[in-house]
Length: 244
Image (cartoon, rainbow, N blue to C red; front, top):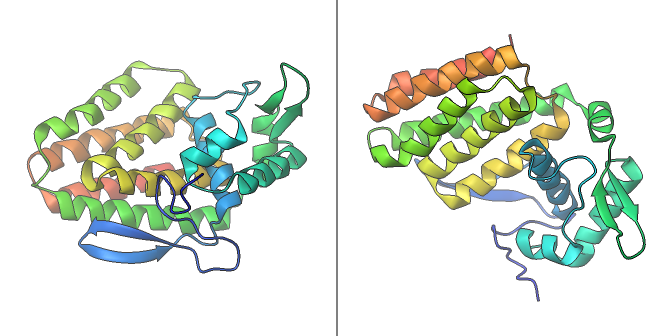
């Protein structure tokens, strides 16, 4: 039986007020996720998997029961969400021995039709608030070795010219930053935000990611020396670079 609270914390069902606890940003409080329910969660997490290239167009997704266990929601909710994504053209359902649910070959084309700049701007502003709070709270208290995986991502991003790899590494950096500064629970909260943004915004352009990665490097330098204000400014500069 799936734990109703979920592997990654509780997710509200339709009709309730969706909130997620955010711990470690000065103090604990509940912050809204703008209508996120179980079906939204399935969509955003699959979108995040595509961005992270853990699944690609044409790949088979795990069975609904596996996804339900991973996300901590009911299998019926997952099945309904997958069916809705099939109807939208994001996924394909195939029958038979080699059947299952697959990421549609036209994933990018369909997602482009779903872009919503207004909703994305709201979530993006909230993500900025989250990261600024985490940086301000954790500056000067983060062990150097906890930043090493983040530095490795910066180096990997510097070495690649592939747009898909650049978008993947940019997203992985922010997931790793959330975990380094706030723990596994905050990483999952950031994953919800980033997954939704994958559906609402186009992948960042390579030249924008290059500039963002310079902000990543500056942020890590300032975090390493415990300089709170410059570290927060690096987070803000990162967001400005994305909108140029």
